[in-house]
Amino acid sequence: MKTKNKITTQIIFGILTAFALWISAILLSGQIPLGENIELYHTGPLVIIFPFVFLAFCIFVAKYSANNKMPAYFKTSIVCFIIPFIAWILSLLLNFIAQETTPVIQYIANYISLIFTVPLVSVYLQLISLLPTSTDGLILILISTVYFIPMVVGLLISLKMFKKDIQNSLKY
Image 1 (cartoon, helix red, strand yellow):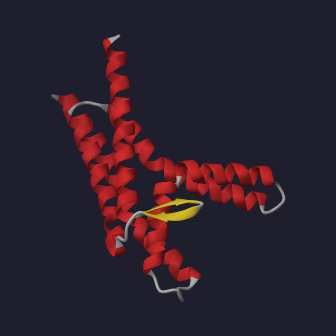
Image 2 (image 1 turned 180 degrees about the vertical axis):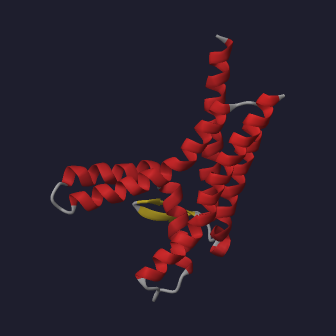
């Protein structure tokens, strides 16, 4: 019974850690996109540091969970860190598939976007607002890719660190 409570606690803390990460995304962007952008305050280029905040959260979670032998915390945190990305891709795919032919699929895609991608979209919209209005679509895709590279690197580093640290702690 005690083990089950430990795992439940780790899962709850993993969700809370991810919640803190995505709240920081909204705070750094200064806006909440809920159909219409709700600007909380003007942040300017502050949103540029978010990928590095994400990277820091990933490394912190990996080190903390490995040092305290908390694999459920690590797995829950990383999954919750990735959910907005997966939801965004799923929403884009569903909208592409529907393309005015199946409104039900579009409604599902819109609700997925509304529920799961708000922090990620707020960061992305703030990033776009920093660019000149004459930015070409290909340049926007390139900038977006470069912007999200530290986030992917953070996830990969945290996976490697956790695996290495957990294996080292099992040796002793």
